[in-house]
Image (cartoon, rainbow, N blue to C red; front, side):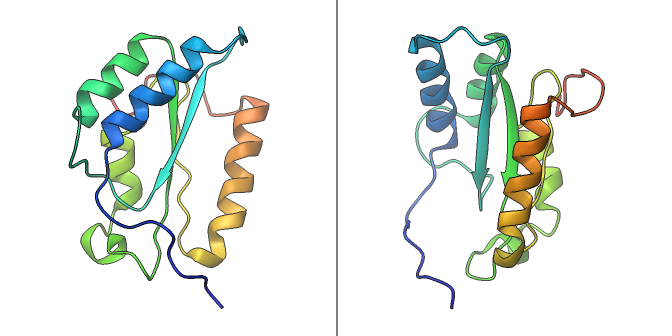
Length: 133
């Protein structure tokens, strides 16, 4: 049984990216890689700064944004965005070695998360490149 959706309303992706950047900047760790894992079922923002301006600021700070678009039957994403992973690659991810791992369904979500985490921890994402630019 699929649990009821826990979140409703509009997205503020630009705000979320900048909040993640602020949290990375303010923490007491000095990692050699700084990565924001962004997942969701939409590639739109309805509030706050634009995705493009927030993404640019995050990348300029040396932080990579990896994406996990989630295509789910309870969401509008499959019908509205048949190429959702490509939209994430164009609009959201960026920075050195950035990549997208899509979850094709709720059943695939755990596998997609596992694959994404393994790639991030291992630092395997292909040759360093500015993805999505």
